[in-house]
Amino acid sequence: MNEILRKQDLETNPTTRVPMCLCLDVSGSMNRIIGGETRDTGRQEFRDGKMWNIVEGGITALNEMVDGVNLFYQNLLEDDVARYSAEICVVTFGGNAPKLIMDFANLDRQETERKQKFSELKAHGETPMGEAVNLALDCLEQRKNEYKDAGVDYFQPWLVLMTDGEPNGSTSDFNRAVSRTNDLVNNRKLTVFPIGIGEEADMNCLAKFSPKRSPLRLKNMNFKGFFEWLSQSVARTSQSMPGETISLDFEGIKGWADLY
Image (cartoon, rainbow, N blue to C red):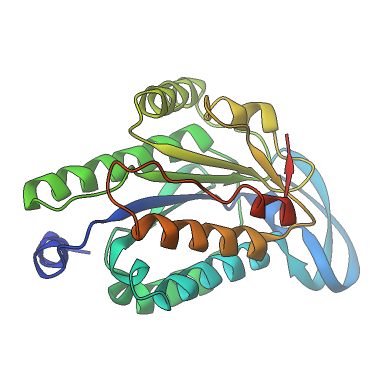
């Protein structure tokens, strides 16, 4: 979205914002089948550091994640307060480099773009996690500066980091991302939700991004349960006052997550 529209969003809607970046793994392993009927093709391919059997049909981890994100947006759009306070950008990582597939905007303005971008999303390549987190933090920082320039209040930014594997991008980028994230969290300038997808997710790696809270692993690939909980958490935050301590529903976590 161009800068004129970004500024217009802030001028026409002075509501206190809840800025969030969804940092989502779309590496090749997210093509793995987790449900539905399949047919074995008899072929194998080496992707994302592992050898995979190639099948046709079925429901992939990526399919379920996209459905969860769409449910997340739908719930926020149906909430009278969160609809105007939540702002979301989406960074994906798969292949050689991360991509900012959706920049910050009000939710109504994102609707057409979201449906198109997520319908076109493909899982491929490696897992440049460090590079993706750095890009996500850059996007959050830029939007915070725009809030300040426009005189718009905002809640502590949120970073949702979801992965089904382990990072295999640049070591220096990964270490820089861990350092930046920890500094922000420890200084109460960022809330991080590190989520492992499946048994192959490197939970030790995710823990490095979260000095205050243990990472969580999706139970039974329950993406919809997680994004339902996340939308409720955003709605609860949007109805509070900036600086107020928000009590998240950690009892509700038990339905979709295993503690690490």
